[in-house]
Every structure is written in C-alpha cells, then in structure tokens.
Amino acid sequence: MTKEIDIKDKIFEIFISEDEISSIVHSMANQINNSGVKDPLFIAVLNGSFIFAADIMRKINIPNCEISFIKLSSYLGTETAGKVNELIGLGKNIRNRNVVILEDIIDTGITLEKIMSLLEKEEVADIKVATLLFKPEAYKKDIEIDFIGKSIPNDFVVGYGLDYDEIGRNLPHIYKLKE
Ligand code: IMP
Ligand code: MG
Image (tube, rainbow, N blue to C red; front, side, top):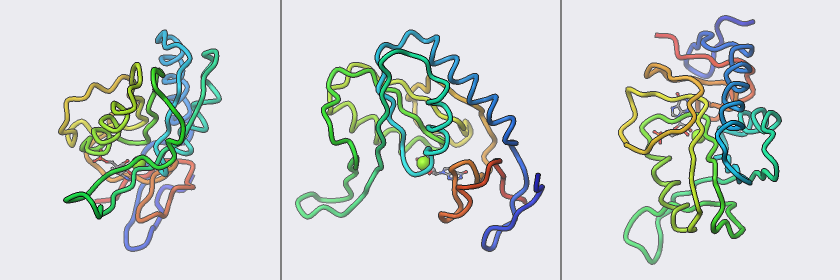
C-alpha cells in the first residue's frame, strides 16, 4: 500500500488501512443488526458516505431494510432572511419510519444537527446515527451518536469517500494530513 500520497498542495500519510476499515464496518453492521431496530430506513448523507453506505448495507441483515440518499444544500433564500438548509433527495414520505443516518465523518456536529432538525420536521418515529469516523475533540453538540466506527484525533483525513477539495474519494485506504 502506498504510504504517502500527494493531493494538490498537500501530503497525506496512511492512517487506516482497507483491511482495518473493513473490520470496523463489519463490527458496526453487527451492532446495528443486534440493536433491535425494526424495518429501518437507512439515510446516507452524500457525497462522503457513498462508499461506507455501500459496504455496510451488504452486511445488514435486518428484514425490510431500505436505503435512501440525501444531500444537504445551503442557499440564500429569497423569502427567508439568511442561509437555509434543505434535504435534497428526500422525495418520499418518511413519517413514522425508524431512520438510521449513515455518515462518513462527524466533526463539529453542525451538519448532523441540521440533518436532525430537518428529519424531525418529517415526523419520523426514531432517529439513530451511525458514523464511520468521529472527531471527539472537535464535536460541539450534544446529540447522541449511536454507532461510532472509530474515534480519531482532530486530523484532516481523505479516502474511502472522504475528500480534500473533492479529490481522494476513490482511495481504498484512509489517509491523514501529514504535519
Ligand atoms: P461537521 O459539520 O463539522 O460535523 O462536518 C461535516 C462535514 O465536514 C463532513 O460530513 C465532511 O464532509 C467534512 N469533513 C469533516 N472533517 C473532515 C475530514 O477530516 N476530511 C474530509 N472531510 C471532512
Ligand atoms: Mg460528509
């Protein structure tokens, strides 16, 4: 495996290998499978979580599970005062569903908080949160995270869906910014 890679102006070094990612994803899937969640609707947050979602879904064995994808958009509304966030892709009625959010990484928690508040408006029955990576030192919210793959230091990481300026999502391993 390549120990170091260059992306644009930065150097990244290997941090979590493909094999380690695979065992983390497997163990998260086991936890979700054993959590007792019924007829779950998984909602993967694009773009970053597309690879994680594809991998973990193949290890979920809960009956009647579904998956959907959302993207958060922010824009300057014409009828509202400031920035509004919207869930793109949430086309169907999810009222009373047991939702499991799939995130690639939770950093400050700002994105998660927005997603939670938008989903609560949809009157879902329950929301659980699963994230592959979590940065506890950066987290500023008190929303409980139900399933955490790996807690990492406050380093910038790329690969396995995560990008630096849109580059690096295709890398099979996760790399961190070299100091
Ligand atoms: P948060 O809102 O601060 O929790 O961060 C949300 C988003 O920032 C994540 O969904 C990622 O898209 C991005 N992000 C945070 N940390 C990293 C990182 O280390 N590498 C790549 N993207 C990151
Ligand atoms: Mg993301």
